[in-house]
Length: 40
Image (cartoon, rainbow, N blue to C red; front, side, top):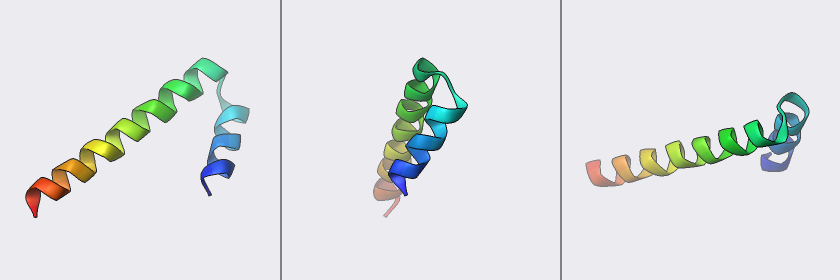
């Protein structure tokens, strides 16, 4: 799943953009998990 998503990103975006997007989505997921954990 993760590898396929990475491959698609590589195809669609130039490298610097796909790294930026990957970092951004990673950051968002991390924050969401923290938020959910704090909510419990």
